[in-house]
Image (cartoon, rainbow, N blue to C red; front, side, top):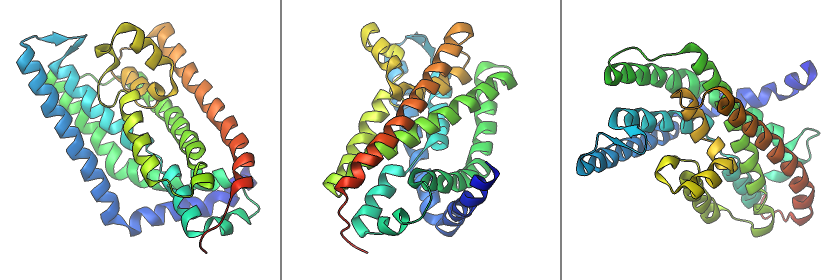
Length: 272
């Protein structure tokens, strides 16, 4: 383990340097997500005002506000760019240099993204968590922070990130066949945004559809961590959904190994 960490430490440093070097691009990405977050807030505010109801499908407006901002926080924390990176490396041919190195192809992406996460956590996530808790306290009338739930939320986010990472790696391997992933990646992000609960809470869906969506891996990306933070998942349901997240991590990790062996047989380097 020590030797493995020593091998991949330069990739962590590379990810950190990339985040600090391209600061403008990084901040515009965050600002774009914040704008989307506020758009969601105004839409849901209009929905509640037009309904005239204090509660809809188990959500009050204050709870919906917390849900919206926690979704933004979680989406930022678990974000993974594996699909885009693989597609670009295949398009410009730089993948050839990565493949000849005696190290794991997937692990190089993982550790490089960890470097980016260090920047994200200290610059964005910590202030946002403080802001969310202040917002919850004001809306609910008292302090809502629960340290145990916070630890469970972080655990769930780690599992969600690994699911997202390995899923994106698996999806990125499509580029070995179709060569360019920009359009497919846009479509994938739109579909996952809906299936992960980032657009609408599952409780607003028909019961059968809600049950199906909760079992699919995409609910483990955003919906599960947010429900844990909000205290909706407790007891047996909490351990069930954490276990389901672990299952999907192992499933996509195994699938990524299988697809890597298949995809490399179809590689055609275009540039480089």
